[in-house]
Length: 276
Image (cartoon, rainbow, N blue to C red; front, side, top):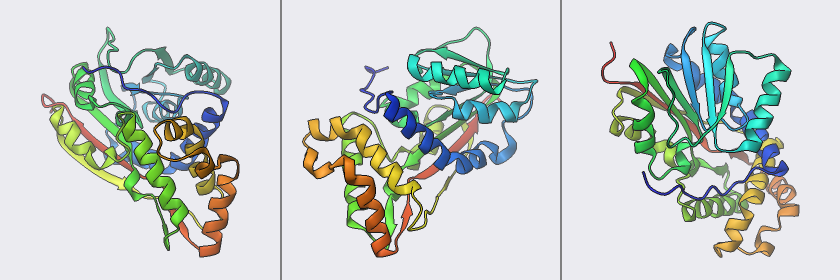
């Protein structure tokens, strides 16, 4: 596998709040994708790649029930501490969190399924990572990847500020070796990693002109990416003006009576070739 790429979003309090807001925005689509095809079922042992604050792990825990288990791995000590605190507070006893590199983690016991949301777009060697974990699946095991297709970010009718923010974010992610439109290629990645019977579709959310979710998410993304955007000379600090950005986006959407489309959340799932 190639050298670990730079993770540009961090784990400070502002980023944690952004991750929670993003998870809330993506929750209905995530649950739809997790439930698609009924491939994650009670009793399964599931590995959650890049679990972060545990949002997906907790959703999967509901699907596998008390007879099943979920192991969530992440390399961020800070995020895992919060996830574990939330697990204990909610009394969830079928989830365990492990600090580990998603690219090298191995376990002594095989898994029935692998899931991962918003992790592959940070990995230039995503195919190798998928193949590595698929080798640890039981025969016929399930692999499910969920990621953004950021090319769908736009306003209808168009709002230039939204387009500019999309372009800033895409260039910043690409400059760090990430692929913000990887959702469009998830099925290809799974097949090339060895999965068969692969299915894919995306879920698009539409946010009304007065919905604060969209401006908050866009401004939060820019705030987290600001060091990269400025450092890579993509835009200046004055261009970003992060302290007023959320208000400016909200005003621009309101003035144009524009619906905001956040990234499409794409899911792709398949099984190992030696399955039934």
